[in-house]
Image (cartoon, rainbow over all chains, first blue to last red; front, side, top):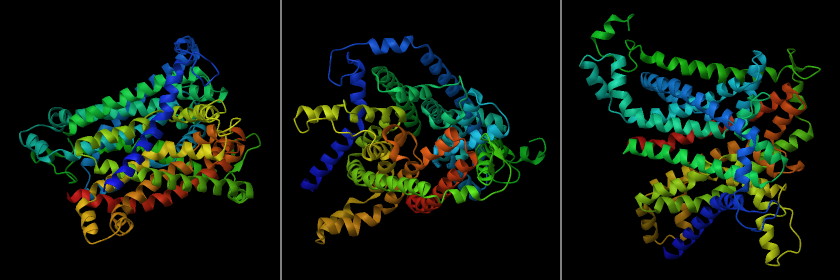
Length: 258
Length: 298
């Protein structure tokens, strides 16, 4: 196995390099003093400073945080209720519903974007941050449901039955028994929904009206205008932000499953 | 609960008619119905409607939109998209398989760290990841810089806005979708089976073909579909890394909706894309059932 082991390790190293080199180069060059050259011209924080003075960028960041916050809270409320609801269905319906809720996560994003745009045009709801929030809940809701459902499935149903036998009502069972046990999954799902919402481009692209640009839309228009060190700096900030959010989310979910 | 006096006296079993908490699913189902199913239905309806003079939709039934898609220009873009997605899938499989196998064979406590290694770039903004390749592949980029520095080339090669750039971007974007199901399949692979095959004098190739491959096949199918489906509907990658000749279905849909404003034609395109995806998904769920059965019995 030694020879096979060597090639496996080489292929793995190649994969890791392939996955991380582009991001690493991007971040390193966000500190490069030269605006145009790809050669190293010395260290600078100038591009980060420029980001902070870009009014449109700050506005887009605010919009993104607003959309992500509102859509995450809505997805959590609807999603936790939904996950509890699935639990209550007969087993054969559960399998079907588990399959159906995956659909919004699997179909091409562009489909969801154009379909929702057509809906809002048909019902004459002007495109704005509101329509963006509605769209984000469409893909965040199944995400929350899948994660919370996975946690609920691992719980011992006898615990809530015991609580019922001891006279607890439906709400009390949830508040005192179920909720504390699924809380880590709910927090993890919330953080994941925040990340997905903050990162979404495709659905937002079709649903954001004029003046409702989010951060990814702003990044897209900056990239379209041409490569610049400001984009590198902005990318570095976004990479670190999503890595932070996801790491926390995974850690919380890990703790809940162990 | 008030409507079911018996429910309070007797603990309700999940799925029993006594249990009224199934309504908890109603808001989520309503949301999905209004903002997922209905919009998809509208796409279907609009694809049979006529285009208005100034864009928009005139509700007059026609099959002309689907007829127009038979024009060679559209056929070429469709075939091209399928080809890009297919090549991307094959590349992801070839690149990702050794990686997945390596992770599955790693010590237990290291496996979750390796999975994190795959997931971190995956959770990085897709635009940023695509931009990273623009930065590397452009004429003044790092790759051309190195090649020039080593004297391998005299002037920068045009790498960006070429089909190869689109392929790199697609593989980069969707590689994790391939590695994760492959890892799950490899992880279930019992190493003693491989040892047994070796003991029975199977060569390296024979062991792979006769023992490993049949066992990991469901993972290969799942991973391939998870890569193929988003790749065939890609928009950002061909839009940013490709040139005028590398248009894919996603770009065509965006073009028809937002530039030409021919919504019926855009809808017909979308619907064909969706039909394709649904067909592929049927295959996926069939395989997924086989893949997840052993998990349930564990």
